[in-house]
Length: 106
Image (tube, rainbow, N blue to C red):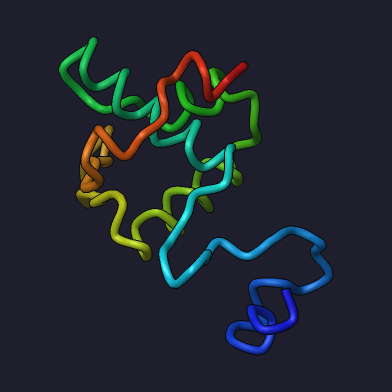
């Protein structure tokens, strides 16, 4: 974590978690994987992206957590947020890079 902290210290303010970069490749934390898997499967089933409140309820997190994760994913290029839409999320990551929803929530 030392080298990672030197690379981007703000990411590690007071946190003991590991960096999301391994061997030069971006990796997802388990909770991040759950968010993306939920968006993918929900969109596949319902033909539209989930509302933020649906993600909050399914993943059992607070509204600010959902919003913060959406901003993080947008900055990393995993999703595209479409302004002035009720369900503004579109995945930009290929489905084969996502874990199965059942295994990511177990």
